[in-house]
Image 1: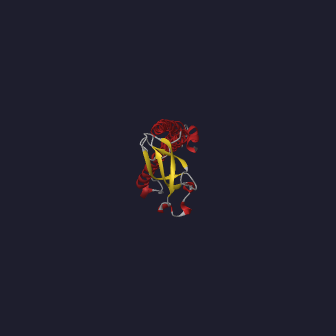
Image 2: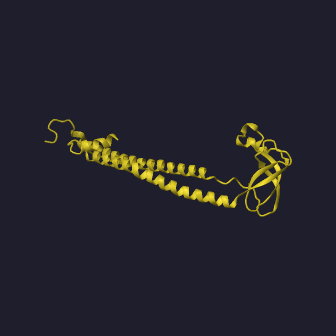
Image 3: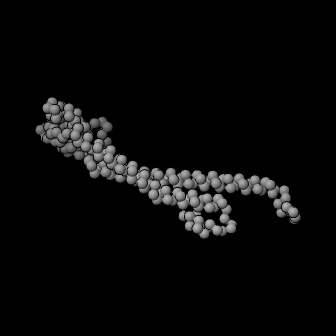
Length: 201
C-alpha cells in the first residue's frame, strides 16, 4: 500500500527510478485483481459447487430411502470401538442385528448401527437404505450442501488472492535482483578509480 500511495507523488519526482514506478504499478494491478478478480473467482467456484452439491442432494434423496428396522438382538461393539474414550457421536449408536424390508419389497437381515442407546429385541428404528435394501449413509441435506459451497467459494477467493500476491512478490523479487546486478556492474566498472581526485576527467 505504501508503494501505491507513493505512485502519485513519484510520477514527477526527478529522483525516482524507473523500477520504482514499475513496482508501484505492479502493486496497484495486484490490488485491483485481489479486490475484483479474487471475489469473482470465489463467486463462480461457489456457484458451480452449489449447483453440483444441490444436484447431488436431489439424486441422493431419489435413490435413498428411510425404512423401519426391527432389533433382533444387540451385538457386541466392534473391536475398533473398544475404547470408550475414542467415541464421540457414536455414543448414541449401538450395533444390533436387525430385520427390515427394502423399498423393493425384499426382506433384509443383518448387523447395522442403530441410533438407540439401549436397544432391546423388538425395538424399531429408522434406517437409510438404497432401493435394494443395502444400508447407506443419510443423504446430504441442502443446508449442509450450501455450507460446503460457501466454504469452497471462500477458499477459492483466498487462494486466488494468495496466488496474485505471490506473483506480485515474484515480479518485485526479480526486479530487485536485476537492480542489484546492475549496481554490481557499476561498482565493477568504477572499482579501481573510485574516490581518486580527478577520476573521470
